[in-house]
Amino acid sequence: MNTNEDIVVYTDGGCSGNPGPGGWGIVVIADGVAKQLSGGEPYTTNNRMELMAAINALSVISNTPSFAGRHVVVNIDSQYVKNGITTWIHSWKAKGWKTADKKPVKNQELWETLDSLNSNLDVTWNWVKGHAGIEYNEICDSLCQAEIRKYQ
Image (cartoon, rainbow, N blue to C red; front, side, top):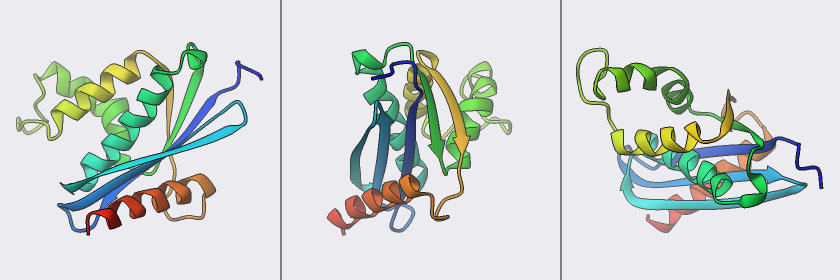
């Protein structure tokens, strides 16, 4: 077991209708094991499910002692989450959780949770194209769709 290797994560979230029944799926790959997790909500939005996928992935890593101090690469097909956590969040916090047009940031509580997790880990955020045949991204999409079906 090489504990110096990166932990690689894939995430996806979505819903049927927006808002509507939603789901998220993640794959966390570490030490030769790809662990799949998913969840959902009966009435939510696509953006909330994308955020929940990222939050759950980083929570798994934060709560696994053997992962402490290891670099994490998150592969995510949501520009909203990637740009939000890497760029926009700095100005949102500086402006008291207001957007550039002075409106409250949507999903603030989820952003605060993701920011806290992200701040305590060494994370690189990598955007990947969704529905492009990327194996683990497709698995995440399948997990997400299975969760959505539970609520339909």
